[in-house]
Image 1 (cartoon, rainbow, N blue to C red):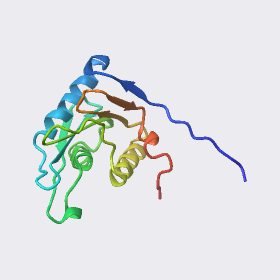
Image 2: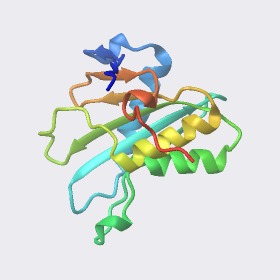
Image 3: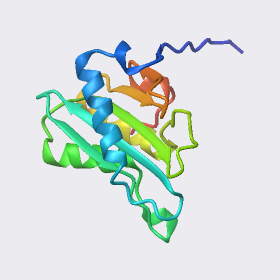
Image 4: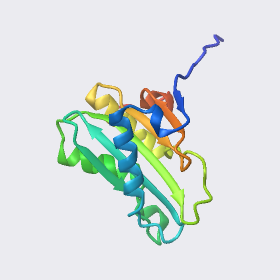
Length: 157
């Protein structure tokens, strides 16, 4: 049996001032989107924003349902809308932000497995990396150069 090594590269930032202008704009859009999330059950508001290759920014947020599997995560709402509206544009970056209603949550939120797989599919189809910015309510976070960091062994047909 041969042993392999898998290394991960990502960038940590402590505040929004460390981000460039475009990334700062994108995370502010994700924060804004989170304020309109429909989360009456979890009280957990997630916002996502994507920047397309034409510099258009698309926002989305989580949409819960009493039948939990029927709701959708902010990432998929945003990615599906962006891809359906602009099918020929590359999705360059997605920013994801989450907070709870009483503002006690302080960490970044990483995408669920289904959202990771959707991001992987988009990245594979567009043949360009899909950057991921994960922002915490304290305005710190991480930047991943591609979805490969979150889902290194992707399902492909």
